[in-house]
Length: 150
Image (tube, rainbow, N blue to C red):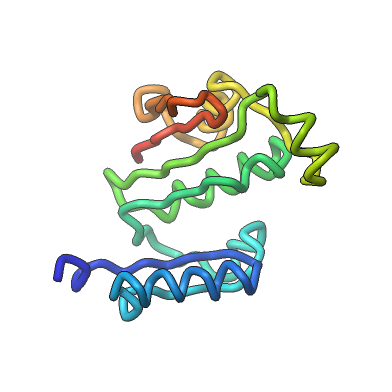
Protein backbone atom coordinates (compact mmCIF):
# COMPACT_ATOMS: atom_id res chain seq x y z
CA UNK A 1 0.00 0.00 0.00
CA UNK A 2 2.80 2.41 0.77
CA UNK A 3 4.00 2.19 -2.83
CA UNK A 4 0.79 3.62 -4.28
CA UNK A 5 2.29 7.10 -4.25
CA UNK A 6 5.84 6.12 -5.23
CA UNK A 7 7.16 6.11 -8.77
CA UNK A 8 10.47 4.38 -9.53
CA UNK A 9 12.47 5.16 -12.64
CA UNK A 10 15.41 2.86 -13.40
CA UNK A 11 18.09 3.51 -16.01
CA UNK A 12 20.50 0.85 -17.23
CA UNK A 13 21.78 -0.07 -20.66
CA UNK A 14 21.69 -3.78 -19.87
CA UNK A 15 18.73 -5.88 -21.00
CA UNK A 16 19.53 -8.29 -18.15
CA UNK A 17 19.27 -5.45 -15.63
CA UNK A 18 15.86 -4.57 -17.02
CA UNK A 19 14.63 -8.18 -16.82
CA UNK A 20 16.01 -8.59 -13.29
CA UNK A 21 14.51 -5.26 -12.18
CA UNK A 22 11.11 -6.15 -13.61
CA UNK A 23 11.20 -9.59 -11.91
CA UNK A 24 12.09 -8.02 -8.57
CA UNK A 25 9.37 -5.38 -8.95
CA UNK A 26 6.85 -8.11 -9.73
CA UNK A 27 7.97 -10.16 -6.73
CA UNK A 28 7.62 -7.10 -4.49
CA UNK A 29 4.26 -6.22 -6.02
CA UNK A 30 5.36 -2.80 -7.25
CA UNK A 31 5.41 -3.34 -11.01
CA UNK A 32 2.91 -0.53 -11.57
CA UNK A 33 5.30 1.87 -9.83
CA UNK A 34 8.30 0.98 -11.99
CA UNK A 35 9.50 2.56 -15.21
CA UNK A 36 12.63 1.34 -16.96
CA UNK A 37 14.76 3.23 -19.46
CA UNK A 38 17.24 1.03 -21.30
CA UNK A 39 19.86 3.61 -22.14
CA UNK A 40 23.40 4.65 -21.30
CA UNK A 41 23.26 7.12 -18.39
CA UNK A 42 25.89 9.24 -20.16
CA UNK A 43 23.10 10.25 -22.56
CA UNK A 44 20.92 11.52 -19.70
CA UNK A 45 20.06 14.66 -21.65
CA UNK A 46 17.80 12.47 -23.83
CA UNK A 47 15.46 11.46 -21.01
CA UNK A 48 15.96 13.47 -17.83
CA UNK A 49 13.08 15.89 -17.30
CA UNK A 50 13.68 19.57 -17.92
CA UNK A 51 12.42 20.48 -14.46
CA UNK A 52 13.36 19.04 -11.05
CA UNK A 53 11.09 16.08 -10.29
CA UNK A 54 13.03 13.49 -8.29
CA UNK A 55 13.04 13.23 -4.51
CA UNK A 56 15.77 10.59 -4.43
CA UNK A 57 18.34 9.37 -6.95
CA UNK A 58 20.72 6.48 -6.35
CA UNK A 59 23.88 5.89 -8.40
CA UNK A 60 25.87 2.85 -7.27
CA UNK A 61 28.19 0.53 -9.17
CA UNK A 62 28.58 3.00 -12.02
CA UNK A 63 30.97 5.82 -11.19
CA UNK A 64 33.72 3.23 -10.74
CA UNK A 65 33.97 3.17 -14.55
CA UNK A 66 33.70 6.92 -15.24
CA UNK A 67 36.48 9.47 -15.42
CA UNK A 68 36.23 12.71 -13.44
CA UNK A 69 34.72 14.77 -16.25
CA UNK A 70 31.98 12.21 -16.86
CA UNK A 71 31.17 12.09 -13.14
CA UNK A 72 31.00 15.86 -12.75
CA UNK A 73 28.72 16.08 -15.79
CA UNK A 74 26.43 13.33 -14.50
CA UNK A 75 26.27 14.55 -10.88
CA UNK A 76 25.53 18.08 -12.08
CA UNK A 77 22.70 16.86 -14.31
CA UNK A 78 21.27 14.69 -11.52
CA UNK A 79 21.48 17.59 -9.07
CA UNK A 80 19.40 19.58 -11.55
CA UNK A 81 16.81 16.77 -11.69
CA UNK A 82 16.34 16.81 -7.88
CA UNK A 83 13.64 18.82 -6.19
CA UNK A 84 14.79 21.24 -3.49
CA UNK A 85 15.62 19.04 -0.48
CA UNK A 86 15.97 15.95 -2.70
CA UNK A 87 18.85 13.54 -2.14
CA UNK A 88 21.42 11.99 -4.45
CA UNK A 89 23.18 8.91 -3.09
CA UNK A 90 26.31 8.05 -5.05
CA UNK A 91 29.22 5.72 -4.49
CA UNK A 92 32.56 4.65 -5.84
CA UNK A 93 34.74 1.68 -5.07
CA UNK A 94 37.69 2.38 -2.79
CA UNK A 95 41.12 0.88 -3.25
CA UNK A 96 41.00 -2.54 -1.58
CA UNK A 97 42.79 -5.86 -1.35
CA UNK A 98 40.46 -7.56 -3.85
CA UNK A 99 41.14 -5.26 -6.80
CA UNK A 100 43.88 -7.40 -8.37
CA UNK A 101 41.70 -10.51 -8.01
CA UNK A 102 38.66 -8.87 -9.63
CA UNK A 103 40.68 -7.67 -12.61
CA UNK A 104 43.16 -10.48 -13.20
CA UNK A 105 41.12 -13.54 -12.17
CA UNK A 106 37.46 -12.54 -12.53
CA UNK A 107 38.13 -10.37 -15.56
CA UNK A 108 36.27 -7.23 -14.53
CA UNK A 109 37.23 -4.15 -16.51
CA UNK A 110 39.66 -1.71 -14.94
CA UNK A 111 37.97 0.63 -12.48
CA UNK A 112 38.74 4.05 -11.03
CA UNK A 113 39.29 3.75 -7.27
CA UNK A 114 38.38 6.89 -5.33
CA UNK A 115 38.58 8.08 -1.75
CA UNK A 116 35.92 9.95 0.21
CA UNK A 117 37.86 13.13 -0.45
CA UNK A 118 37.75 12.45 -4.20
CA UNK A 119 33.98 11.92 -4.12
CA UNK A 120 33.39 15.06 -2.09
CA UNK A 121 35.53 17.12 -4.47
CA UNK A 122 33.63 15.76 -7.47
CA UNK A 123 30.31 16.57 -5.80
CA UNK A 124 31.44 20.12 -5.03
CA UNK A 125 32.58 20.65 -8.61
CA UNK A 126 29.19 19.36 -9.79
CA UNK A 127 27.41 22.03 -7.72
CA UNK A 128 26.79 20.52 -4.29
CA UNK A 129 27.89 22.57 -1.31
CA UNK A 130 30.08 20.96 1.34
CA UNK A 131 27.31 21.15 3.95
CA UNK A 132 24.95 19.36 1.58
CA UNK A 133 27.11 16.23 1.49
CA UNK A 134 27.44 13.51 4.10
CA UNK A 135 29.83 10.56 4.00
CA UNK A 136 28.46 7.09 4.67
CA UNK A 137 30.80 4.33 5.77
CA UNK A 138 29.85 0.79 4.85
CA UNK A 139 31.22 -1.93 7.17
CA UNK A 140 33.68 -3.53 4.72
CA UNK A 141 35.19 -0.20 3.59
CA UNK A 142 35.06 -1.33 -0.03
CA UNK A 143 32.66 1.37 -1.20
CA UNK A 144 32.66 5.04 -0.36
CA UNK A 145 29.17 6.55 -0.33
CA UNK A 146 28.02 10.15 -0.33
CA UNK A 147 24.51 11.40 0.43
CA UNK A 148 24.14 14.84 -1.14
CA UNK A 149 21.06 16.98 -0.53
CA UNK A 150 20.08 19.76 -2.89
